[in-house]
Image (cartoon, rainbow over all chains, first blue to last red; front, side, top):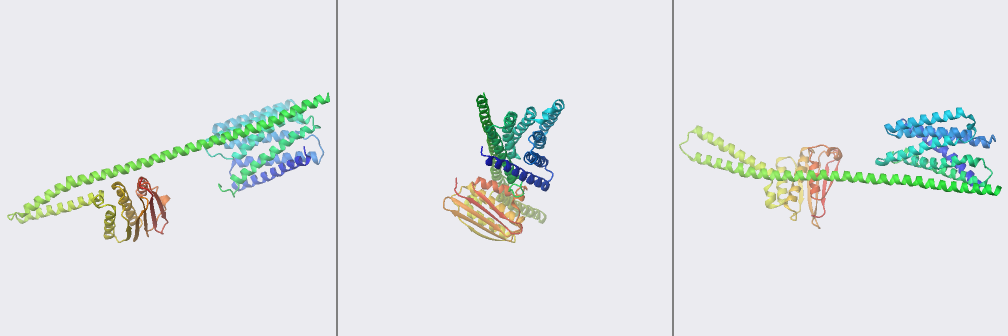
Length: 218
Length: 268
């Protein structure tokens, strides 16, 4: 894989994430009262900090293993997106989000207490149980939007597509990272980066079309 | 050994790439499926609303037709049962008054009866006339409207400029609807609008159609606000225009007068 193209997508992702985080935080501060925007802007900001620090750890401090940040990434993504979807759901669906949220966090905590060495590598089980509910939530959100004008449909489409595919990549990431010397592996990470840029672009378009104060729908 | 290892790695990564592509397609498909289902459902709902609106309109039109029918019947009954009998009373009183031998008191009473009968006859004639203008059936819309306008200018401080084409291709029923619309508009302008000048133009169009333009210099109103209120009669006018298969355009602003345009393109 062309390393320049690879780096380009990596930095584009970070820049887009930064722009999105700023725009959503700004919108949240101007609109106020939108719970969904609160969680979503927090999510973007958290993920930006996690990705930036993982990048800095590798590039500046030359530390090879930054995998412990992955746990922060997956768990914060899970918690904040769950809360984001919860704010959009109906009453009994909210209850299920609460149950899933506490159950998943409980299971992961128990796992880490039992096996603290898991913190140093990809935890497949954690990736799975923190991503799968999000895919389910996004489908439920699509279902809710069937008979009315749904909100945040583009974000939802991005979440569904990116979380589903990236979960597959991360689950095999354990195997892939143990063979980092192979050039074929870069291909997979490259696909992940392209998909991530697509996801962030969808979030940006959502902001432009439906959240920005300049949008026609207001 | 190493070659074998790389071969299997390549296979796994190949499988992974296809797996990713597959997932992207499946999720895209899912999103599109929901998107189009939603479109379909919305379309169905819009259709439902249109049908119920249509039904409401039909009910209104039916009630207007029933109302006209009832008016006709009452007018006829008023004429046949009351006016005819009162005429007999009046005639008989006249005959009695011819009698020279009556004393003053009886004569006065009879005169009083005659007076009341004449007045009642006059009012019943007027009521019947309002309910169903006979002139419309006998002489057509143009004459009936001219008479209506004359009545208005006579009884109220108002100036009416009119230019009415003869719409003799219209059936009596449709003519009656137009008559009622103009009547309602005139009432609105004088009662609610406090207009002092009304311009009415009825123009025959080439293809069995016509255009009615009615404007006044009254206080005007907010169409969207007032159409919700009952009693203003705008809904009634709208339904009648719908029966005529026409288009109803209202142009009015507060304190700027009002203009009503009714367009009917073909008499179908």
